Image 1 (spheres, rainbow, N blue to C red):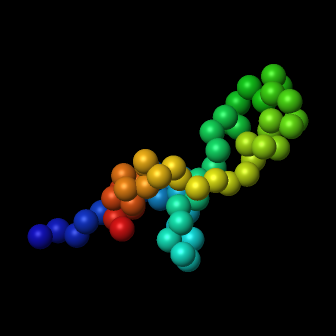
Image 2 (tube, rainbow, N blue to C red; image 1 turned 135 degrees about the horizontal axis):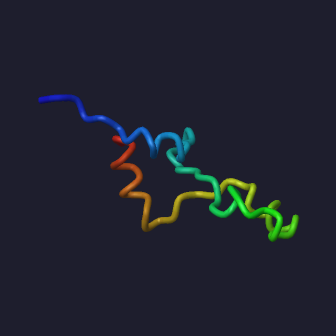
Image 3 (cartoon, one colour; image 1 turned 180 degrees about the horizontal axis):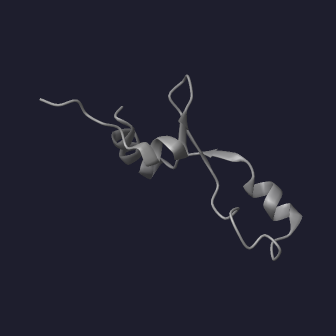
Length: 64
């Protein structure tokens, strides 16, 4: 039986903390920044947890 491979794209997008939380960047900060106010860009620059609905899927992609 071959080894289970983790999804490399998901590994680049999600960080797993020591407690097992899944952290991700917020969407909407890659382009069209001239239209967005600085308040919005500051709010989007933070890191948030992966939603509860997506946790199971992301963990499976990471091989956990």
